[in-house]
Amino acid sequence: MLRYLYASDLARFPRLARSMFTDRAEQFSRRLGWDVTVNAAGEERDQYDALNPLYVIWEGPDGAHGGSMRFLPTTGRTMVNEHFDFLNDGAPITSPFIWECTRFCLSPGADRRVAPALALGAGELMARFGLEHFVGVFDARMERIYRLMGLEPEVLGRSGEGRDAIGVGLWSMDAAAFAPTLAKVGVSRETSQGWLRYSLALGGAAPELAQAV
Amino acid sequence: MRARLEALLTSLQEADTLEAFQTATEDICDIFDVRHCVYHWVNSDGERFGAGTYSSAWVDRYLEMDYLRMDPVIFGCFQRFTPANWKDLDWSSKPARAMLEDAMTYGLGNQGYSIPLHGPQGQFALFTLNGEASDEDWARFVEENGRDLIVLAHEFNRKALEFEGAEGVVSPSLSPRELAAIRCLARGLSRAQAAAELGISEHTLRVYIESGRHKLGALNTTHAVARALSTGIIIV
Image (cartoon, rainbow over all chains, first blue to last red; front, side, top):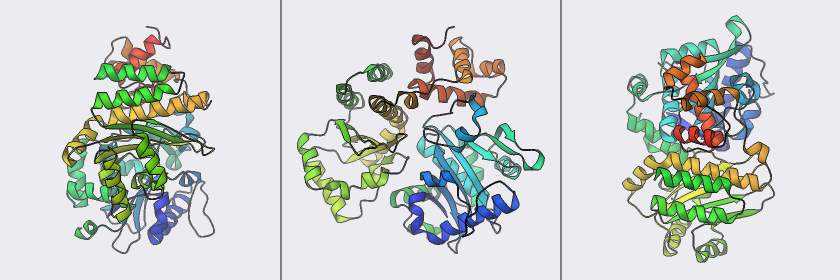
């Protein structure tokens, strides 16, 4: 199931949280070789994790992380505005209807439902909170995954070279993308909306709905 | 309604005294036909400030009962950035339900929608609408007006931060690309034409327009163009 958890909710999901941060270390540090910090516990965390971001996390049947992404509104501090300021002539991109999405991560053992489930989660956030755009940081593989999902990322700039280049750009999910994405995940729209509602209401306390999938 | 909201935003943005907050909350109740509107904030020094239409009897009662410690609206919004429909919050505890019933005896309606706001130095504020409606009607109300309410909430907060003396942080100036995008629209170009003229995609154009709209404190794109023209930041 998908969980929508603020950083402040993660303490109640120790296994899920720990496996998310270790999977991030595996993907961003070891596999992609990004210049990120991995702590003694083998977890990749950065300063934006300390700003109480909202994570969309796929939780497997064993309670472990299957994939995740991290959201912050551009009305506050964001990675894109602090590190990619060429995007807007050095001025911040800022609006409560534009959120930043970073740290798209798939666990090494993720099944093929996970990537579409994360796209679905982003789509539910857009629908629920009236969002118009995500601005995000991608690697080449993520760009491919986004394209496969029909999300058409638009890269506005890159830093680094070749295969290792990190792109920064925009993407969104329009209403037409819901049906095929739901089909790939194998859930109804009602279930998907229920995941969001329960997560945000209870900070992730186990909804009975979770068992239905 | 558009015109009234635009006028309300303008008077809020031009306000130089705190009374403007009170007037604005009363106007909002009138415009949206709801029982209450409240803007409440705590700054980085823990100082509180509030404006709104709750009765002073309810405010006193809230403090007397120390409801802050159990209020699901506070729990659902503090540290978060997503707006909350009260119905979706966790009212499972008995004290929380008792608080809501108590609130209703003091003239609050059974429904609410609260928008959390965060300033740069740990400042936190809540902008809340409260009304009496069925769940379906309230969900529809939020669906129809949520966007405008978020814009209003941010303008309350921008003004509050300005009173705190944080102008530079509060009103970032528009970037050359944001200005160029809005100038194209002011000249009557369609989005497709504007994007072509600026050599960017429509998606990118929309991001610059939206970011510019927010910085201008405008309700929508048309209003943003009007504000940019009337304040003289663009000349066509």
